[in-house]
Length: 476
Image (cartoon, rainbow, N blue to C red; front, side):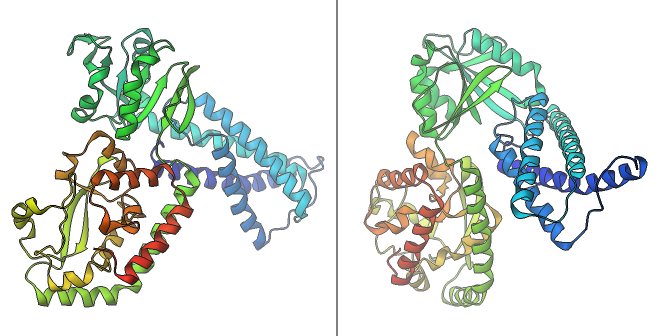
């Protein structure tokens, strides 16, 4: 449906919470009205409205969202039918109502008639089902108009690929645009089958991904054919590209696997990036709080640094860098300028002195650094304006360093997976021997180690180490 991206899921979760809260209120008025219409039915005595009741409604609305999350209501939605959505709503309404009854029994809430709870169960189901129908129709209409669509690459040219293409074309509301096909070695490139062009063979998957905008790769193959697409799986894993499999084959090439159903056909999704939804929510919340508070508290200090830069060297106060971030999306960020005005132009003359192996540039005692820059860099003070990028959501406090456009062109395939998560101000490389590492491959290995082992606790440890690096001035 509408909400595969994180912000879409947030919208739907908020809508579900509001709908549940509305259900409590609507059920009360329906219950009161029913008492007036059917006075002979023992509905129970009046419900006492207190201030605590409002908090209980908020808490139970959150519990409903947790129940829906546990039931898989917010996982990959493009292949889900409205029927399955209503089924999830039914399960959530029943489970949630049982939780209310259990909580009432344990905590002995104010008097709650069982007739009210029964009324709420019906109203809640109807409200959530109505909400899902509306969202389903909205998503369908949006995608038919060309919005919120994904470009997919299909690997395979057999019957399963044909069936999948036909199913996608019959379901425009899925919002999937097929870029082309990847066929077995020996298939003629540019030839069309099932109305889609063959872009290359399995052995050319890396080139195909680099030359075409692809959001996801769908492998359509039988269990026998799966052995022939191992290279495709490994390449997509290196590149950080989402993989889904239309097959009865269960692979072992990815650390996290989820299974969806496409009209009864199993779709296995391989994920190589952090996907713990609630931990990622909390990570984003921490980013917002820390960056927002820091920008306010450090604003006088920012002013002092800005004055020093302005009156000690020619050029702007901030250095605007255009970089590549999450999912290879470009964005603008800022640092305090620590180099002379024409630093980028002088870089070419210094390339021979580059101490780093790989696409990045670094030399000791860089002559382009200003006097103020020599003070700011060891303490990483020049990085502070990036807190604004964290607050905006382009970056995180902790994550791999973003890539320059010219660096990306020189990245090897496995380097690109570091761009499958949001970049950060600090990272493992920053706190684990930054000055001693001269091989970009080693740097990337640390970034991939961070991605594979990510947790909020790891972020916390990196932030603590970063404070140590800043205080001792060991960063450059």
